Length: 230
Image 1 (cartoon, rainbow, N blue to C red):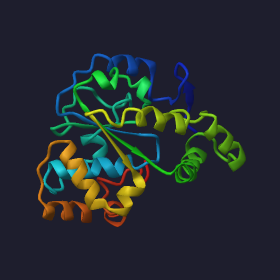
Image 2 (image 1 turned 90 degrees about the vertical axis):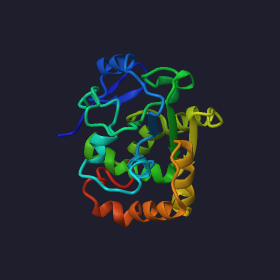
Image 3 (image 1 turned 45 degrees about the vertical axis):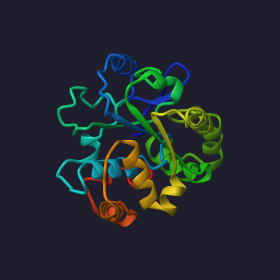
């Protein structure tokens, strides 16, 4: 059975991102060292979250699934008591800049890492997710029309990226490109570590890079939920 989409006040959202949840998030207590990984779907969210988790643990793996230790904040199935969230805390979000449920990102105390990706690759990856989850049997022409017109979950890809791109120079925003992560993962790991205030050695950077390759992530059941492009 396909999941449901609904119009959340002008933005298409999956059924589990409810108006009640978004309202509840307005009172969520943020911490100074909280970090949000924000993307349009299929742009490397899981990959980036795993990098952050390993940076903060100094490369040590644990027995906690990534989706629980660095959860998707808009998902109503996730408890906001954060008992299982490792500290310093990390969260996943797919919301647009102007609709970020916790308030205006520029006025919030936390940090944001936004990851963009080549729209052709996003559209291709998102098609298979959409065909399974929301529109079984959808043909590619109909899908493409929905994609470019913002009729899929989390709206128009280009508007989503542009909204965050306009704030890429804010002190609390780090704007990354998926393609740069693939080209030079070690460099991007170092950038992420510096941005979130983690002091790690070159040896640790190399270790984390080896643990976050496509091959390593696929073999790790605690890290590969919706891998590789969620």
